[in-house]
Length: 363
Image (cartoon, helix red, strand yellow):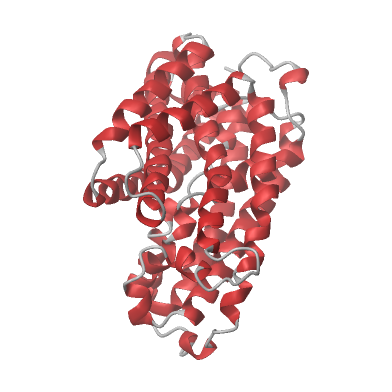
């Protein structure tokens, strides 16, 4: 049930998987995840961030086992387990999943711009321009999408240094006593990291586009490891900067720490940070559109360029319905829940099913 091999000129080097995974994991969630995880486990929540990140390595290992066994992507894996017709039906769910992910990222970013910079910003016109750019990039093929992911991780990486300004006001006693919460609280907090961490499952969608794909597994693990370290350090910096009462009222804790960044040539650094975040969420949208249109092409024989336009139009229409804070929260909550279901429930199920089917076929 393996799929047609992808020509080498369309494939990417194994090390680029690191940038693809990091660019999908670092998105809109990083701007305000600290308050959400602290609700359950207080300032022990950094332990949950670390624990959730470590658990992802098991899922990455499963993803590579699945793709290696079927010698293909999620469509090939579903067809291998369920048969072609039912498999394609199951694969169509992942089109919806990737679209909801793209929708949540883009709409939340627009909300950040509206709250912090331009309250009158039009949802429709901003989305239209952003989606036209994303479609243009996807039209360039997977190598172009990968190039954008690479540059959108490397270029804004200097932003990490700006959080050192908060260390001047850090009180590390905020973290004490450590392990002051139950295992249940820590697990709940780790679950609330779902929206922030999802995106690492994308090798399921582009596995055939990697040259010598098994060699890329170590880069996938490294990408997840680096993201985990970034999120853990940022959580610790945030917890030492804010008291628990202050953090409870901070929706965008990461942005609020930028308020104290003082430079001779810029007064409001958070404006520069938000402008840079355009680069950070661009690969989120591009990879989601590429992945969902590739499934449309593979499962339903629809040309990818047509598929991308249809899916982008769907996003453009749907985004206008999320016009209040409550609706955006609802969208983000469900994106996190669906992402958790896909990564921690469906992928282990598919892994076990693939191994069983392989044994049966070998006999």
